[in-house]
Length: 354
Image (cartoon, rainbow, N blue to C red; front, side):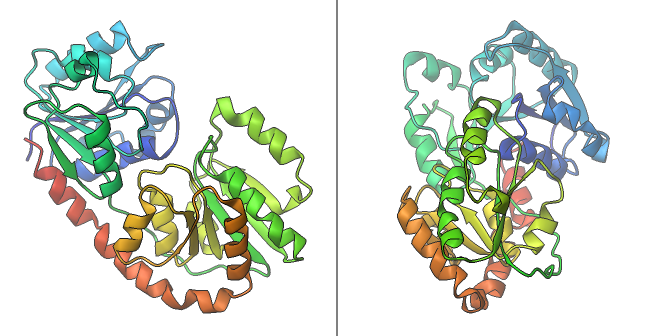
């Protein structure tokens, strides 16, 4: 058994990072005593019935109003000392300045897990200070690893580590449907690709192709009005179904033909990998981690980055040739299961835990 481990994610949202923090806690709970530290009255804390008690996972909640908070500093420090925690895996970035002071003088193995692309370098004196005690920066793909090494300052003892996240996919039989079905999975937020995907679907509407486009995911509140205003003006609004946040993702993958995912800046999308493994024809922009997935041998379509005209062209061509596109489905399934296995991910994390 490894020494006690805290997984900290103080985000108020309910997207991939937050879900991944819960998943990692469950994966490591057979090998270490796990404490999840989350923001009170928000998604991770409110989802405690899914993990609290699972292999003795415990939850600690913190109430705070800003990323630099005395509540974070003193509460996290108290939890670390009370529970004799020696490993900390942090999902996030903005609370790092509070956590630096929470950890000051404590003997911990600090791991920061990175899942999103960062844009601005943070190598000023203050960021060099707050990141100085990090032991490992863990990235979930090569694209992110390069991004982290460029953006984040490394201390004298800091190492960079690539660990692919594993997928636990429940394979289901395809659900019969009588029209072309498309799906997008992800929090509805700026740059996540929902608007570009909907715009691309206009070509199907204009060509008289009967289709249904399912959009799964809750809203980023600051983006909600902009998206709804766009959605309400669509002449083919009846073709687009806003499902919202749902745990029943597999049923939508099972009833869909195409995973339309023109995101501007993914780290490594679990949803995209799940769609590949479920046998969907997948379409992305040529950016971030998608060329890396191509290099790993996965077969899908990339179009010019942020080029809706190219996206429309590719979508129309695929929609008119669905049967021929399914020839590589089984190859994708096998390769995803091999590259993103639970055994491989857990082994890599155990290699850096005390």
